Length: 317
Ligand code: FAD
Image (cartoon, rainbow, N blue to C red):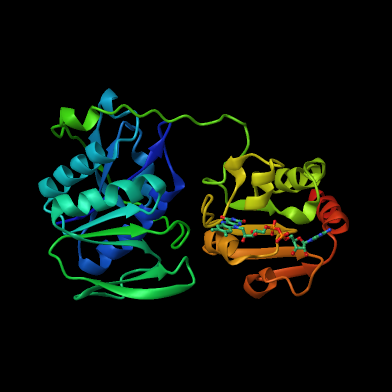
């Protein structure tokens, strides 16, 4: 009755969220007196998982699964859960998992709580803390079903090494041809830059930058910090920056360790998408800008003076 996690990988490497999920599941497993089993798809290099407390891996290898397929992946995890007799299945609250988790929960007749941000408040009854209202509040959700599915919010737990010995097992669940009637293909723009989804640090800028010609200093700041660049919605709407950089409620969600907002007012729709970030810094000429209310650090000043100075100073380190 181990805890089962679905460990997401990309190009043969586990995503950081998968290792964070393993760290989290190990702590939950310890409190329940059990172990952690992971199911992986088309990733045979699984030793990294054991560093974070996974003691068994069910390896699924099938070319049909090269592209993410929510129905097929949900079916695989269901079969793995049934094989292991697991009562708790944990996923990362990523875009992929947000598709597959509800399908999985239905298939397992399980209750599902997404965006979990802490270890269970209680395991009997099973209660978890999760974010609500676009990360503005928390609630405690009780899952009463026999099998429980939970989704761990990115960056909510961190990595915790806890090495254990590992058993690897090839797992060949049956696949339903009907799940492959629609072919999906992942197309990712190769930019050579850090993507917003993977970034630990995001440097974001808004209309305060006045025009696309002024983004050089934002790129410099991102480069010196090893960060991804992002922008507010109007900036991508006007075409100053690509739509792929638009963050917020209607754009990409950001749960970075550090989010730096330059010349962004802090409208509720922007904050809703970046609120899960750990440390928020704002640079704005207007001390009354709403962003200052949610920021951990704020500089009231002109971006055109502050940002180049910041870049200069950071280059000294
Ligand atoms: P502004 O509001 O114009 O703010 C510019 C800021 O720059 C000001 O605070 C100003 O003081 C500051 N500034 C000016 N000059 C300087 C300078 N030299 N140095 C430093 N600071 C300076 N917005 C999003 O971002 N993401 C979303 O997902 C999103 N979804 C939306 C969904 C809906 C349904 C709606 C209605 C709106 C949505 N919006 C979204 C838009 C949102 O309401 C705001 O209009 C938008 O976030 C404002 O962008 P901004 O902060 O770049 O621009």
